Length: 94
Length: 349
Image 1 (cartoon, each protein chain N blue to C red):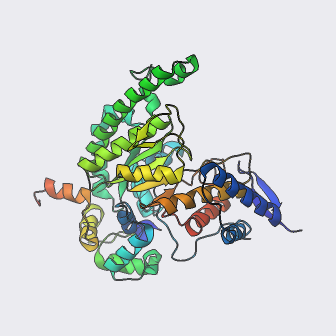
Image 2 (cartoon, rainbow over the protein chains, first blue to last red):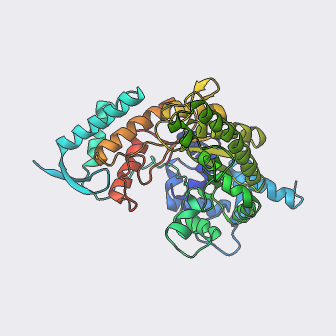
Image 3 (cartoon, chains in turn yellow, purple):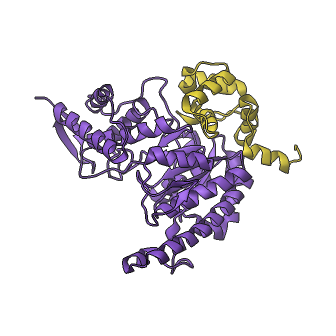
């Protein structure tokens, strides 16, 4: 789908939970308040990813990256990401 | 009569008429239907596949909105080991995320077998933790059950491949059952360590390479892992379109493992708690690309129809209709991707 250049990573996170592709795309589009076709549109997703601060291919000063971006992805998608949970446990956030 | 550029199963270029391509498509789908006892491709699907195969463009693509997700086996082996690029695995993951724009990626080691990893699993878990701190995309950890590694002289168990030719059937079966216990224990231990290191997913890859006992080990490990770590995604990629009966009598949840085709393999995977099923259809180099792709689509379509979980089809060299050459032509891989996503309706590759 294009990974973090589009919404490939986000759709994959839902597929990894056993959700079929079309349902996963609809779920992510609903959470991002965009259309299913926007999910694989690099222009649309750049704007959406930057506004939600969930990581993009081109780094920007002050933008979230790696684990920081996953904290935001967890909130946007309403799911638990195992590495975020581990990070919170280690840093006393949980 | 006009001819179209296409390829043989080994990747060699060949010119064929549309009629000959259609003949091979019909023969390929009939072969899969006969072996798997599944429906052949419908006439309109055959028509569309012939259209894809004869498109004049070198590379083709899916219609907008039909994009699927990509997962990887042998993920971090490809840049630093196979391509010989002097980058470490963390850099490999980030190259995949930021440059190749992979949807997911797999952390793995050169000896791609769970038994071998047990010796240095702590260091592997440390790498997983660093990968999770640096990557945005989901990261799997993966390796093969590779039951053969538990046999002498590498392991403690008598080699069933030596016992079987000697007619020692009972001893060969007993040896495989013992190997299953070791493999399940190793896979649950290692994947548990990776889950604690924050892995998004675990991959059991090339499942069934050592036969039905190999499949049983992966299914049992998946079931136990899902109980302990319900939040982790489990992907099971098969070794072939047909479970070999090296043991022959093993069952999972009352179903015989040997002889299962993809539409039956996926149901066993579901019962074990697997989240993504990797359907495999092997390429026959003696046939044409058209024959192989039609055959792969027939199995994949039946698998998707039977499945409740997502199905990703292995579409690398020698599987999923892809021709049997290490430098896979993009006219082949792009047609395979398009056909699998648009005709078989797979969830990804």
